[in-house]
Length: 460
Image: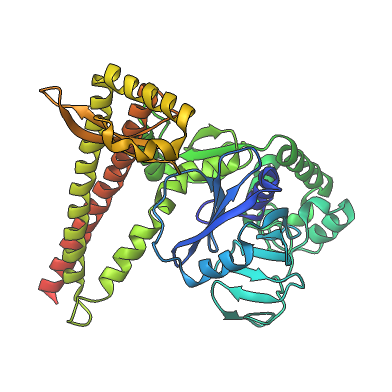
């Protein structure tokens, strides 16, 4: 994978996603026009997001990602049909860049087709594969992707792992091109797999295809298939070696975003690039592209902001960028403030350990004896407690000020210890720090673009 997933990548993804079978669909989101997020509840595990970027990639992630208050039209439709649906099948269509998900509901089965090629689509279909709604309507020579039409995948490529020696011999002997050009054709192996095969053959890629031993190619394909089905993991390839020692998560993500150029589900050697290993292919893709995709909503809001200035119609490029810069700097200031607030609360909880521990113990004992509702009625009589949240099992308490009187109010989880509650606030602060890094990068990019736009405006 470079910018979009190959058929080989999707084969690895389809295999890894088998662990999601029997998961329930919790929510569906559309943070950006090109992105769909299915929040799944796997049995016995924490919820996880299936991130779908149209025509590019699909992977799993547990990142914190802002979502729109009002879901988009396609997300609303997915919620209507797939709410609490059970994911019962995941497959790659032949060896094409199309992933097919099947969901079971009380009203029958529904299908979601995810296309990973340029101008690819995401389509919801009923149990007879009639399109309920595509993410984008499109008409091609061979197929129509519109509501009411039966879904038809693009013309299928042969599965290279099912080719026999006679088929390969005929392809090679009938070709007048080089081995790399012959194997790279869509109806043979495709570019990405062809390059990998020729690399493993250790032959000159410009040699005539007709001179190549077909059995050697079949053997290499068998080797790749065995690796893909039995030992596939995730590998990123970077322009620089991975930093040594302990490194903050946000710094590592920044490093990967700037330096990684390829991702593979199979280990290989690429000249002048450094390999970084992961336990799975989807986790490698998340490490590389996850930060960018998690900011999809922010990018959508910037795009909307750039369309026009309020009451003035369309803006000049300089005006758009100046307005964007103001918004970004305002957001950055807000992130800094939130980090300071959350970390200060965490430190205050730890500082008043004995006080917090006593209040938590007293509240848990009282609730165990009388129940939440009874305690709620008497809450005004308790000096150090402000309110109770029975739904989330939380209590709002006062921390003592300098005079040992009720001071700052904080929410605590009743089922967590003092240190665990403090850690919750530190974690919120850490996530805000992640946003700060992204905001600084966005501001720097806007400043560069603004400088160029001003220069262009002066010379035009």
